[in-house]
Image 1 (tube, rainbow, N blue to C red):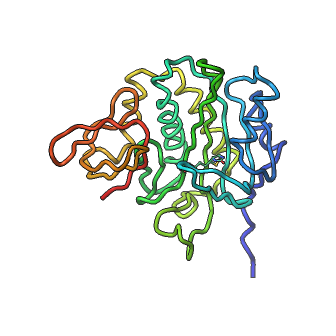
Image 2: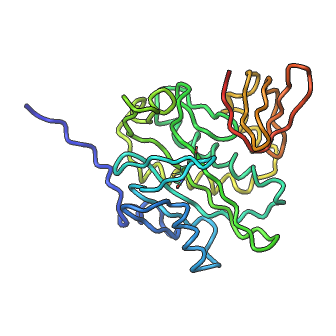
Image 3: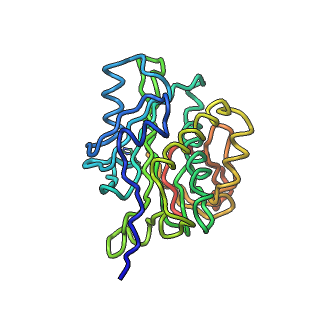
Length: 262
Ligand code: BTN
C-alpha cells in the first residue's frame, strides 16, 4: 500500500527565518508560555522593536484569558506572542485586541471551506467553535505604556474529540482546503497585524472588524469583573466596547468580558 507522505509542517528557526525575514524572533520547541517568554525578552532588551515575536511548537503552561489554561501540544498548533508598541491613547488599548482578531480571521479564512467568524472581542470561530484565542497583556512603566504583548493561539490540528473541549473548540485542519503550513500562517498573521496597526482608532479598522463579528444582534450573557450582564448585543463602540441592551431597556457598555451566546 502506498501511504500518502505526511505534509511537512515542522517549525524550526531556519524555516521561520525564511518566512519572517528581518523581523526579530525567538523560537522554542517547548516553552511555558510565549507571552511570558516575550515579557522576559523585553526585560532583557527594553528597546525591543515593535513586531518582535516569540513562537513555540509546544507550551507547557499556556495561559488563556480569565486565568484559564491554554493547550498547545507539539506539532499541532500555533503559539505566538508579538510585541506591539502602538502610539495610541490607552483608552483605545482594546483595539489592539480587535486588530489581532481581524488579523487572524483574515489570515485563516482563505485557507478553509467554511465561514470564519469573530465572537466579541476576538475569539475566532468556525462553526461556533473556537479555533483561535488571543491573550493581550499591556505592560506599563508607571503611567506610560511600555508595550503590548499579543498572545495568539491557533488550533491547527489539535484533536479535541473525547475531551471536555469537544463542544467548544475545533481545529483549522478539519475545514482546510489544502494542507496547512504553520510557518506561512504565522507570517500572514504578522503581516496582517503590521498592516492593521496604523488603522487603530480609525473607522477602517472597525469596519473590517464588524464584517467578521457574529455577536451583534444576538442575545448574550457576558461575564465581567463586575458580574454578569445579559441582553441583546446591539453595537460596538469605537473603543471596542460592546453595547448590550438589557431586558428593561438599560444600555450597558462593556470593554472587557467573556461572551456566551444564549
Ligand atoms: C483565550 O483564552 O482565548 C486566549 C488564549 C491565548 C493563548 C495564546 S497561545 C500563545 C500565547 N501564550 C500563552 O500562554 N497564551 C497565548
